[in-house]
Image (tube, rainbow, N blue to C red):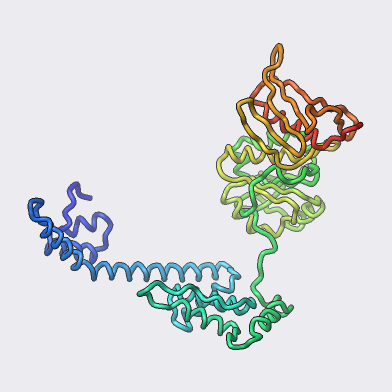
Length: 411
């Protein structure tokens, strides 16, 4: 890289990443049509710039064609790699078929695959949009050819009905590309407070081995603070050896797959959470067939702080024996008077400092203070509590709202 850039020097262009043949062509154009001095007439300087642009036109066109060839090659290579890795998308096979049999480029091959897929799925033919003025129309003929090769007959009045019936037949369902019955663990959503509370004995925590070691068992420390957590099932994900019980974390021997399946099947799990890094998630995706199908399947994601907040939401949904509290999403708002939250018919809000110390939290229903409510065990609930630290107001209001939303009002 030089301090002074000379456009007539091919070495300067190569130092800035240009290939050798591009650099020499650019430098030649600048040598033949250099910039005129600043005191030259404006019309002359603009004419010189147009001459240089005209001289570089063949090079720019060649660069565009070269970039297009690289794009097509890279796209076809990606399709071949996905098929080698076991892809079951029938359109990938059709794209390569269009290239090898019909000699189509990338855009035409994709249109061909779309048309063939539409015909086999029993859909109406929907050709791509027409090209812009001056561009060749290559996608619509390729789509039409793919639609015909897929069994479509546009001239037949009953074509759509015939293909729809054939696509829904048991034979077609058996021969069509298989689809995953559920998403992989790496695609699961983040934990929220929307799902219903679940007994701890029906909860499954899949914890990455790196999380346990690097986090000084921080996740397990948070878990042990929750009453009833002992009934939960905890498995560790090792990127090299796969799933294993937490007690066997230091055992290098692989875990018996049959015993692991039996353990997961007997657990009758309804709530699964994954806390793992990318490598451990990749291994879990490969072993996803071992996991049971549960009502709620989630994983933590993003930064460490966000993962800890998501894990706390998951912890809050665990129900110990004898616990009675409501689930659902709490709608929070922060006004000039302070923080407030709403769940169902109840609203909890910050009511200011208490005397002689502390902070007041009150809960109200549609009639005013929530008076007369009791738990399912008959314990009276008070519509006002006092907390010592204002930073804990959100947690206290959450617990209060969930208690009242699950309570009974005796007349």
